[in-house]
Length: 70
Image (cartoon, rainbow, N blue to C red; front, side, top):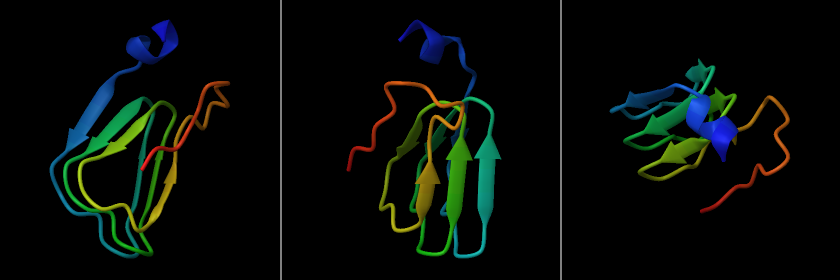
């Protein structure tokens, strides 16, 4: 948990459309939907406050406790 708190967090208030790729070195919070064909990636946690139909790759730094919750 300490490692996650040390990451910066970016908040995006938008819908991620098909063909878009969003990447961030830290935690990423999407306030909107992630449509099918869109991809989001973060070295920390990813939180989507909306519908996740696209791809999400969290903890790309290979942290042991990574999990996907829907």
